[in-house]
Image (tube, rainbow, N blue to C red; front, side):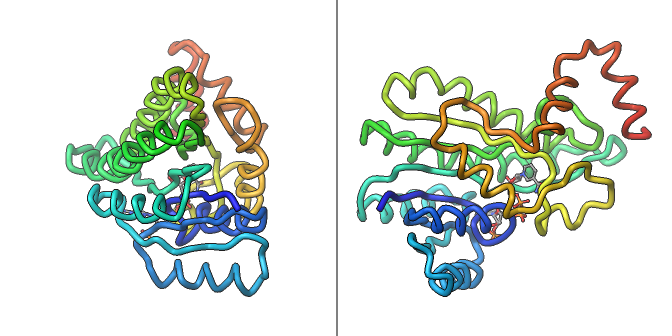
Length: 251
Ligand SMILES: NC(=O)c1ccc[n+]([C@@H]2O[C@H](COP(=O)([O-])OP(=O)(O)OC[C@H]3O[C@@H](n4cnc5c(N)ncnc54)[C@H](OP(=O)(O)O)[C@@H]3O)[C@@H](O)[C@H]2O)c1
């Protein structure tokens, strides 16, 4: 059975993805801080008699030493086929309360937490001479959106980083992808107080991601109509983009 290390598996998109990958027959090493939720996830997979299994590996991705210990323990069981770095969060930032600390906090988790995992993962897969890394960013990273100065910038940093690593890693037979979801129904988006166009269920998103991981291509993005719309915004000149986004967001 092939192994996958997945972060952010205790709830939301990561939880649904852990179950879907276990259903496909993978051993899923599932990481997050909430140990109880990871144990419940393991039991759920056992109860559903999935062909793969879920092995809880609790950690805090902001703690680099913790991350390294967990990855070493996974590697001691055998090679890793895929690493999916999904843990992250969203925090709106308004111009009225724009401050350094809120950006620092979000970057600490979304960027440096992910990099804490990426550093040993890149080293391990290069050493193996094969494998895949997939990083969960967001369609919100395509352009500067209102209230998204911290979140959008943190996810744009992840996409940029993955693009930069792509050529060298591919030369060494290691694939790297970004996963750019639109809105997915999770405990995170349940807190949002605004309309979320074309929001999909976490189980649908998980199935979609799992079906695309082994296909060629750098980016997995969904749902298609929303992704195409965000892709269209990406190429608009500022003179058209800003009036349009002001109208759409009522700002
Ligand atoms: N939902 C959406 O619409 C959407 C859209 C685009 C992108 N995304 C991205 O998709 C990913 C998952 O989002 P979601 O909606 O499923 O969010 P969620 O429901 O809040 O789940 C976030 C996951 O990350 C884990 N996590 C948070 N901080 C962590 C830390 N310091 N160390 C280890 N794990 C940590 C959480 O587990 P613990 O609290 O147990 O640690 C949880 O399992 C995020 O990167 C998000 O930015 C989501």
